[in-house]
Length: 363
Ligand SMILES: NC(=O)N[C@@H](CC(=O)O)C(=O)O
Ligand SMILES: [Zn+2]
Ligand SMILES: [Zn+2]
Image 1 (cartoon, rainbow, N blue to C red):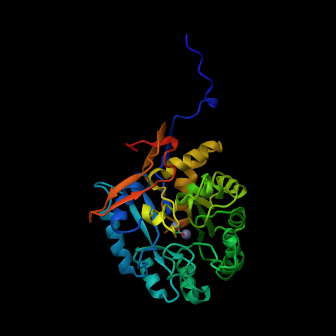
Image 2: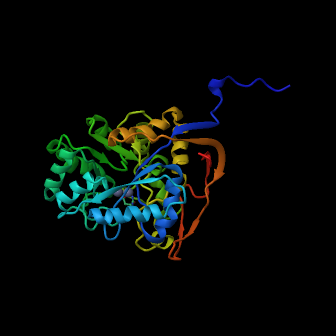
Image 3: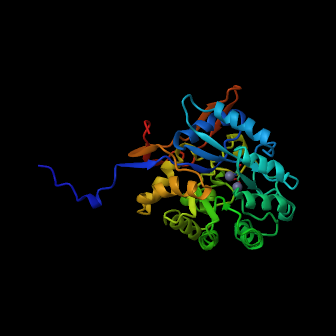
């Protein structure tokens, strides 16, 4: 005789059906890396906000349209993935170009990198006063501003750069432009959670899987671990806990943005290693682990599939995906060959670890 099944309330779910999610912050790169990483994002997500920090950065409508075509060409046959492109703001960018790109449906949003704040941010904005006309135009046409929110001043401790950015730059910016839609990207601190929470309907934040899983100790565990180095850098445990609470809270101002940021092995393992964590292959599975640990699996769909479209004023996706409880080990390395024959090796986030949820292949 078999034991009676436990009541439903204590049986962990084996399958989760969600409206198809979107990734509101991803780096798809270009060339051989694009060929390798675009299918990973397209496998899980219907749409993604694609970052413009290429080299050279995407600053014109023509460059964005051409990049969109290269992304589509890198997708598997039959993929319905839609890249949502962004413009890289510089000190001298023309507001008319931004407005035209938005009107023509090429630019979904603009990205603000404080000059030198992160990878390929050298051409970013040196002073917000220089892009005042662009910000005014964006506010008028309802075009979202996406921000890498860190000051770059060398005298500010790297762990404080996000909080100082909010005080010195973001709060005044929001006062000057109360109608501007702003996404504070990849937030990493309890201060950012509190700030975004008290902001109005025009302010939101994306939260990455890695900032929900690791704190700053991960970078130094048993030695220097470049695979856990990204910007903004992971903070103390109390900040990670605040981010987990925010992501799983059900509040519409917090939504999914992986900040998947692949760099080749040689670029990570170097005397001056690049910032960025490549999480695209199992990002959804990684978020699912957090939501399950927090007892909030019922809120995963809102975070992954509903809050982002609502903020951007876009429809939610039609299709659905299914996550199944099927423990699997994340490969320690991923190898790829671009169409140009260039081989790349990437280390995915959770390399060698077991994840409990897996995206069903048939969706
Ligand atoms: N997040 C990162 O550590 N790196 C990103 C840039 C960024 O999002 O800041 C990259 O492009 O590599
Ligand atoms: Zn960034
Ligand atoms: Zn990023």
